Amino acid sequence: MNTAEIVFASDLANLSAALDFVRAQCRFAGASDDETFACELATDEACTNIIEHAYQGRKDGEIRLTCLWADEVFIIRLHDRGQPFDPTAVAVPPRAARLEDVEIGGLGLHFMRSLMDEIRFEFDPAGGNTLTMVKRLSHGAAAPREPR
Amino acid sequence: MADLNMSVTELKRCVLVKLSGRIDSSKAGEVERVFQDLESQGRFRIVLDMSEVEYISSAFLRVLITHMKKAKRFNRGNIYLAAMPPRIRDVFELSGLLPVFKVYDTVVEAVGDW
Image (tube, rainbow over all chains, first blue to last red; front, side):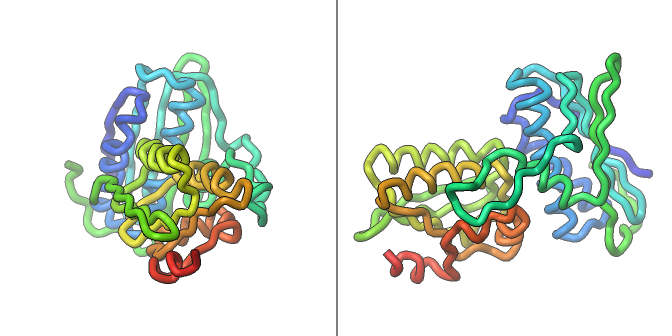
C-alpha cells in the first residue's frame, strides 16, 4: 500500500492545496478522471465539514489528510481533533422538485456517500476523529510510482 | 487546473456572468460576492456561462440556490445556467437539484430567453 500525507490548519484557505494533493495522488494511483473527480469532491465536502462542524470555524485546528492506495483501491483518511461530527449519521434531505422546497443542508454528505464506495467514521476521545473514505478503482492502477 | 476567474458583462436584457476554472468550497464565497453586487444594483436577470467551469462542490450549489431564490422573488428575475460541461452537469444531477434550474445548452439560447 502506497501512502502520502499532509497536515494543514483548519482554514478554508488551505482547501485548494489539499485538493491539489488528492488529485496528484489519484494520478499516481492511476485513477480515471471520473474517479479523481469523485475523490476530490468527497475530500472537499469532508474537509469543509471538519472546518465548519468539528472545529466550528476555528482556523488553527489540525487536519491530517492521508491518501493510501493499492492496485484497485484508493483510500482517503481525514483526522481531526475537533468536536465529534459523524457524517454517516446525518440524514440527507429529500430531493425537492420546487426551488421553494429545496433544503440547503446535507448535500455535501449526500455527495460523499454517493461518490465513494464506503465511508466510515471513528471517534476516539483521546485520539480524535477519523473519517475513512474508500474508492474502488475500476481498472486497477498502473505500476505504483513514488508520491511527490 | 485553473483558478477561479469571473467576468460580468451587462447585456440589454440581462447580465452575463462567465465563470471559469475551479469553484471549490473555499471559492464559492467569491461567486457569492458577484451575486451580492448585482443584487445591490438591482440586477436580477442573470445568465451563468459555465462552459469553462472545471469543478464545483455543494458550497457553490448552496450559493446558487440562495441567490436564485432572491432573484425569483417578486418575479423580478432568475439565474439561468448555460453550457454546462458534462462533469459539472453530473454534479447537478447527483444533487437532485437539476429540475429546479433552467438549463440551456448554449449561452445564446439562455440570453435569448430573456
